Length: 196
Image (cartoon, rainbow, N blue to C red):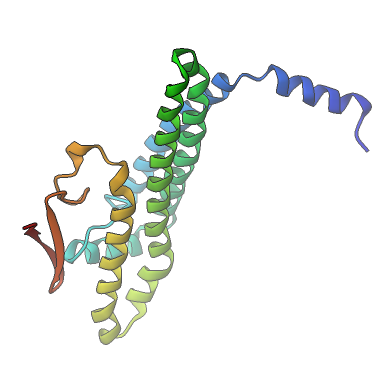
């Protein structure tokens, strides 16, 4: 049984808590999780959370296999960063609403983009838990087919992330989709073909 004043104290605490304060704390937590998560993943020997396709993807599998728990701790901090960032963006509207009702679009679109990015970061974590041990333990025939699964997975979360990338990042490379090209499977990797 709760103390009679407990419920009243909770209600008073919730009424005095400001949305902008919660957003500010979450924004600071976002930065902290990003920095600590990136340092943890980098210290584990895995350079990036999201693997590339082709031969670099196989190098990522080998690096994750040797990284241990430090890689996964950093990766989960990046996921926490996404959730804290979403709360920070929603709370940011408390400050923006004075500028007019159309400003609600900024935190909504930001939260949608950050949701896609956070979901795209969950796929490599799942790959680290499931695909990496399967590849390491597989026979040569299995190791010949798993890179295709890895490449398909890599492109799926790159496609999920693409709408949230700024236009300057949509030029190709290992971190974004090429807006002016399509990719086709060519042996172990992908090659760009211009759109006609």
